[in-house]
Length: 327
Image (cartoon, rainbow, N blue to C red; front, side, top):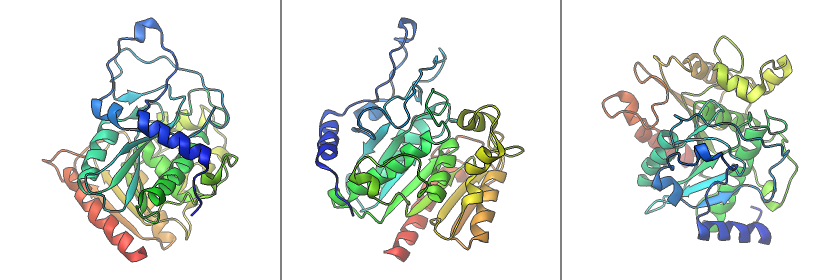
């Protein structure tokens, strides 16, 4: 496994020591009094993905709605990883990818809460703070994958450094973050940015993937319209749609995949998970799928009064079995 370069190692250590926050574009005075994100979020050490300007550049801040919750992040000009360490590590790492229609990042139910649940099971968790493609970035359809590839590589490098297993690294994505996780597990080798340092020589393929109520389709009738528009623009070409349709990119190298969807999800219809499951089966890849009658969309860790409220434990058992097969 390639080692971290000295400059990057120094940057990571400095960031961890300082607990740096996500830098956002300066906001107008009228927006200055917005509530702060959860204390558990701001307390988690932040590791930037890139030194200097991220690939492509072109960031343009957007107006944040006055009623937007503090747990909905926008204006991300400094992508990175929020680190949540368990009291007793089990040797495995999970890269968590929050959703938000590629319009914001939902860091509460799909960030802090899932990190806490996974920490209790011994997982070292990194929540990916990725750039939003509609915020001016060049090559908008590549921006989230650039950050996901870099993030997975950094998690794997950190595992080697911290005495964890670099071959027990999973990605877990929700909604549009599920689309990004599915894109990472199918297009981990796609060249979307020039190599910066030794970290970029590390394999970006996750050892396992979990997609929770994921957007999979990039076109009607099953896509989530806002997610597709934010990622691809208002009038994407057929080639652009095909390039970001992960079910069409499943191959023999796609890692084992866990799927969860509620049948009453009216925002991202369960046909998305069904399409991914069918693609994995056609390719002969391991897949476990759970379809619950109730749950709707965006349930995160889920209500304990519903079956979807117990998926984290099921995922844990599944993931440990996958790691045992490849260990």
